[in-house]
Length: 194
Image (tube, rainbow, N blue to C red):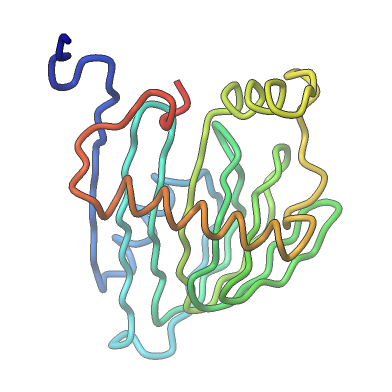
């Protein structure tokens, strides 16, 4: 029986973390991590601001645990390089897309649609976020559902049922834990979507 070298065929996990009370740092970081325009913050008590971002990237898969505490946040957001899906861990907000207006609170899940930016309002919010590249999502749809990869589209911002919402929230929690919170330094290419 042969043993493989450590790291052979594996994808490294790269992590970053930021905790701050500085609204300018938060604004810059959010704009750097997510494609946004015209962000606006409202904060009644600067002493209550507590923001954090813990992120990990492995191949094309990215995960984030994000907390925007003590302030409200309005912006235009988009899915960028791939579908961004979120499980709401705390707080509340609204996403308005060209064909949908969705309110969310703790326990909900949503995915930013491809296409024009959406308007987002978030209040004292926290999320588990996952993003996979569009080609990976399309290949997975073709493999598991028999859909032509070029025809992949999402019809709604929210999951189609409460059972699917629970499945998504559990999946997001598991992947975020594995990528962000565990001591794992590398993952299988299968998990990274490569």
